[in-house]
Image 1 (cartoon, rainbow, N blue to C red):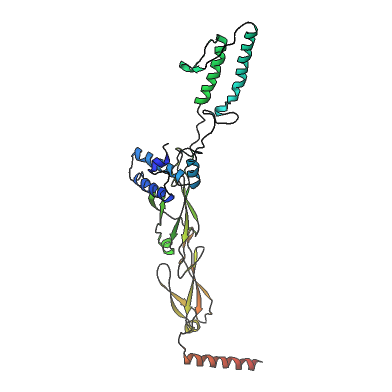
Image 2 (cartoon, rainbow, N blue to C red):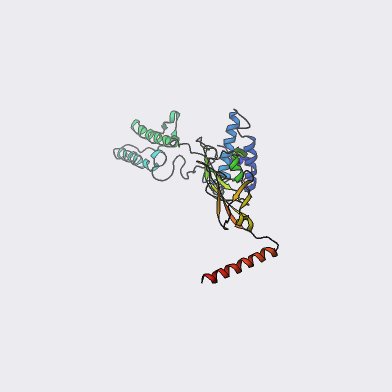
Length: 340
């Protein structure tokens, strides 16, 4: 993969805002929805997202700048080239394994010198086909040296086991939904990676704070794996009149004193318009009346609207009403004394 700075067309001194701005511009320009069937645009889009995975993350960007990870986010190995460092190295090969072979060659040379032979100096080089060549080596020694260099070439050229493609990162989003939208079934719009907007179908009985998972709508994978998911949290917009209790709604309704005593008809607001409600005679304040099917959608249908009656006195003082209440109070006191 190319250097992520080159992919986004930025210098290494670019700010976080510059990186985000460049990513949005390139992601929108190369989004597959704008280039259906264009494999080059699709590959470019994946490359831009992979670059942003590195530079858009403060910790990953710092590691990349220090050379600790590569453009794919994989760790870079320090030390002897061709080996992963430490015991075992790449493919389980350790350069320290050479020691036994060299000791064997040295012992062989020493034995030949003790028998009147001469000690030979080897000049190592790699000839055609990767075989070791040297000056003055006998057949047996040549086999030993070729074993050494064969192991060395194998350790350098052996590729690490292919890593399993990783799933792309999940993304989080929130949508604000009004109670009216829940009743009418209007689909809210959620913004997804790459600048794409999507109309979301809410499940029946959705609740405030519920998280909906959209499979495959997260960030693309930088390693060819499946894309991540989008986790969308539903938030109910507070209503000026109604309080939510599960699928039911609650409403406080002011009624006059004469309506409470004599009964009557009251106009009640609902999410779908006003309806008429019958108030029984001699209704106490705090009584709850139920309007069936005027609540929120649920898996079983619709909840109810629970109307709590609140007795409200006239804003202006009413002398006749006050006189009636005094008479009523006096009659009540007199009746109490008579019963005593």
